[in-house]
Amino acid sequence: EPEVTQTPSHQVTQMGQEVILRCVPISNHLYFYWYRQILGQKVEFLVSFYNNEISEKSEIFDDQFSVERPDGSNFTLKIRSTKLEDSAMYFCASSTPGARTGNTIYFGEGSWLTVV
Amino acid sequence: RKEVEQDPGPFNVPEGATVAFNCTYSNSASQSFFWYRQDCRKEPKLLMSVYSSGNEDGRFTAQLNRASQYISLLIRDSKLSDSATYLCVVNIRPSGNTPLVFGKGTRLSVIA
Image (cartoon, rainbow over all chains, first blue to last red; front, side, top):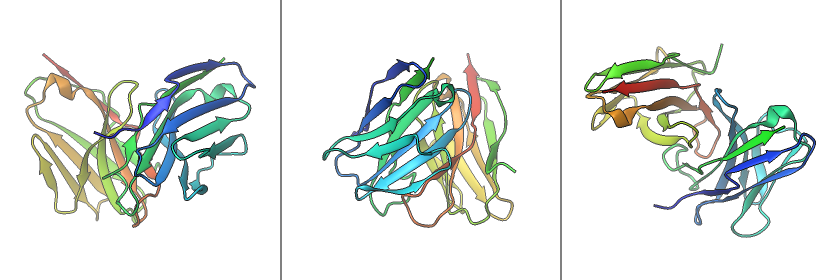
């Protein structure tokens, strides 16, 4: 079964440092997403990306966050200056175009970020 | 009011039991509904979509009541492997590829 892969699986960083989380979406998917889940909380949408630009973003996705598709396969989330409250599991996801989200959206295994 | 609300749980049930989870959503314009399963510190995985007519997949039955803005999931003959957190998920727009709105989840523990 095709899968979304994420690296690193776990990263510990000091407050104020920049972090880049990497994702390889499923190869024929065109829509890409980042969600996050703070420990004990619900999964929250951060941003969606299509055709090399952000198509939608939530209030959480402020100026310290950015996304990029630097080449044909990777999709990255950058947090410019991490805060303690950025500690969470970050899930990358991808989906097929035109499909009802949820039927064909696939999540990666997540990158657990700990800010100290 | 929270967008998607679920039973707080946890539900601790013996093997073989039938258990039901409920979920309500606040946006009456919501278009698509799903149940996801999430194991501890793992990614959400789609369990099943929920249709207006109700749908069944093996031991799992999902139902939707649009008038009451209510979704349910019934698990029959619970297995130990069903232990997980069950997430009620809603898509508020008609087109695909739009953000999913997750409930906080209900934790299920099936005990031998």
